[in-house]
Amino acid sequence: MARISIISRTRTLRDAYVLHALCDIWREAGHEIVVAPRCHPEADVGLLHINRTRIRQDQVGRIPTGLTVINGAVRDIAKRRISSLLVGPDDDWDGPVIVKTDLNAFGRPERQDRRIGRTERLRERLAAILPWQWARRLPPLTYPVLPHRRRVPGWVWRNASLVVERFMPEREGDLYALRGWVFLGERGYGYRMLSTHPLVKTGTMVRHDYIDRPPPELEETRRRLGFDYGKFDYVMHDGTPILLDANKTPFLRGDRRSPRIVALAEGLRDYLP
Image 1 (tube, one colour):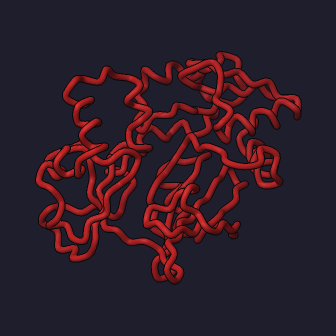
Image 2 (cartoon, rainbow, N blue to C red):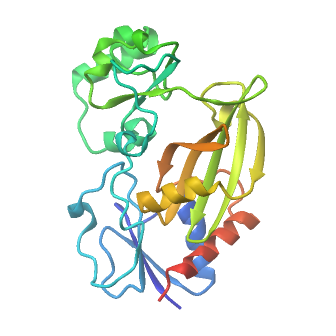
């Protein structure tokens, strides 16, 4: 049996993480799980699980020579790095656009690492009651869609923490579709959610289907970004996948012992010595 060193900011994992469910399965199989901010010096395999968009080396610490670390190469998943849809103020894109944070998850994980000043708190309150363009802050927990890049406020273009992307939703009739792919090694599963809202979320979902493995282009994107474990959100356009989000610390909604999660746990074998 193996000692698995989970490199995390804390010594426990939130049970909302997919990894928490995987660790339960691995323990039952006889593996030892060690969760700590630094890699265990006698680990058989490591797994980097820090819920931040960018990870500095000092946040990881020393890795024993020759140790395989799952997601060890994934240190930056910002939109400016992964997105193929970025739009600049002078680009010739003539369709709708969406304004997002460069950081994942609206930048909420990084918010825990810094003190919030009075100006930012005021803008947060204003964004809840005023149009976001006036508050100079994105509305809470959503990304605004605009009909054209010319409608993007000038302060957005000057804000390095925000990006503007072409808005290219996948449609099925009147519904919006979002696809997901959860993977570990050679194991994984896909799904598609349909929603009445342009930003497809579980709260607006009207249908949910499981699908086969993603197209080869997305698997190539995974290799290019260095992902061993995680979740990709994407849409299909003219038979081509377009990556929207890459998440290395995915959350789990649903059955923690579903056949898909149990099969996903088997992906650990690809990294064991």
